Length: 417
Ligand code: EPU
View 1 (cartoon, rainbow, N blue to C red):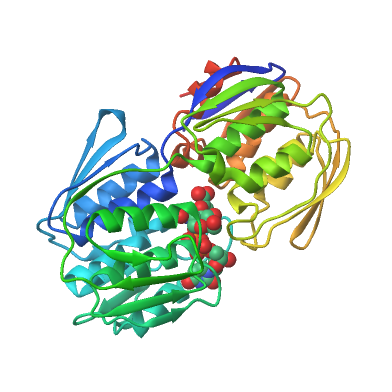
View 2 (cartoon, rainbow, N blue to C red):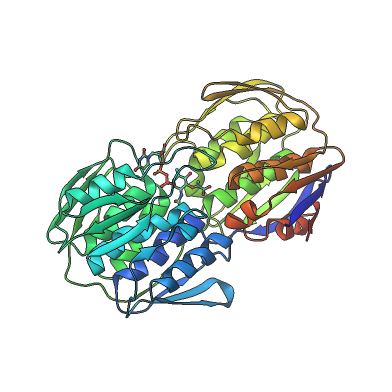
């Protein structure tokens, strides 16, 4: 199993190019199931989760053609299966995004229940309730969601909790439903907006994406389209935090600064100097990091997917701050590993109290989810001596060649295979 070895203490200089957003590419690939015509996506990151979803779409009978440079074509002219098996869903929960499109296009779907994961229980009850309201008959049997529908019908959906993939599943189902669907308390994340843009290019009638009330008018069929996926805001934020914690001066290219409003504001509060261009950012590390409290909430607040990386930065701040995780109940798996490296962090329920600055010392560390792994790489960049991060496959799920990109910025980092 691959590991990443980092020798800390090198500051970062130079430019890094951001890849397309994983969490926008996953629903975009699934949207390809809604039409018998080809959908061509560009700026898709070549990360493991995308390959996993490609395998699932292949299993369903869709042709998925990965080309160089992040181009992917999905051709779902003939679907041969409606089943997402446990083996794939357990490795990647976003597989549940095939449920809405399959129900809308084929009138049935059999999708394994994902089960809990390293960051929390993560149920899909809200996806299922919404689809039932649209006329689907759903039973859970032997760990599988078995869903059947004639033609789905438009409906009023009001989510109790803002859910990103739940909103995306309903949007995709509603495109081919009879009549109008109104989604209240819809997720407003940029990945939802990006999906709405793709669906519109395919002939869907979606309004209000990016606000909490969305309306989708069902149409008889959708057609093929071309779409460029938005840059990955979490990868961008991770490189901002990396430079802030390691020291240095970095230009981040091919990003979209307005998508990082809450992250940029919080990093500035912590003393990080950030200049915004139209599709680039310049980040300069502060001489002294200031502590700044943060709490994660749905967009437009500070994203949960940046919480772990931000915590690594706060271990270097002069003073105490609190980091509260409101989205997932168990997203502090990085805390114990950061403590092993010397961080002073106390956990009180959903809040981590971080007191810095603490010199970190390199260690063998291991993480159980994608963003936690990223936080440990960042810790390795500022730690003394050698850090070896185990279970690199978590990083490879969502970061395109993080080791190469950081090495390009001058970090002493290598992959041990
Ligand atoms: N929730 C329910 N019932 C549901 C759905 C969600 O109770 O049916 C709860 C969840 O347990 C959680 C909250 O609602 O407490 C929000 O979860 P959400 O459904 O929004 O999360 P998700 O759609 O499963 C996506 C991203 C995550 C990201 C979250 C929050 C994708 C593929 N995944 O997950 O990304 O953390 O939204 O922004 O879009 C990552 O990239 O590392 C990652 C975990």
